[in-house]
Amino acid sequence: MLAHETPRRYPSATSVELLTEARHHFRRLGLADGCHVVWGEQVLLFPWAGGRVLGTLVIWLTEEGWDVTGDGLALGIEWRSAEAVRDGLAALLEGPPPDPLDLAASVRNLRREKFHPYLDEDLLAADFARRSLDVEGAYRVLRELLDRWQPASA
Image 1 (tube, rainbow, N blue to C red):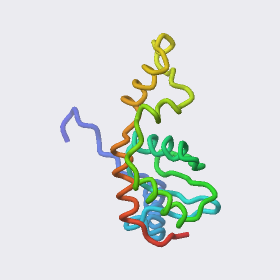
Image 2: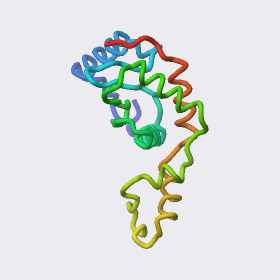
Image 3: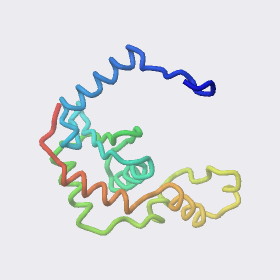
């Protein structure tokens, strides 16, 4: 080892145990091939996409009247069966992707940056759409979700 290198740290026993447990449940729930899990009153969707895509999906589905939350990894859809979610996603894909400006205009608090108080609503929506939304990515991810749809795991 060279003088400027830091010694290699190996994972702690706890981290190895948690990773092993996570891998076990990933396999048990069929998430390598599937994309959703029924969990109580929710259908959890695992799009395996970035934050912009997940945020776009939350806004889009909310605008469509869905009760949906995003936690950074999955989308939680309340009070719908897995079949209803699949059918609803398929129905969304029958039309064109939503307009990013329309989605951005539906967001309640667009004033997030230092100079945002000086911008009008249209410019705020355009800024949010450019910075925070990925409508094309969300549309593509919905297609991929439907292509990977498997019977629900619990």
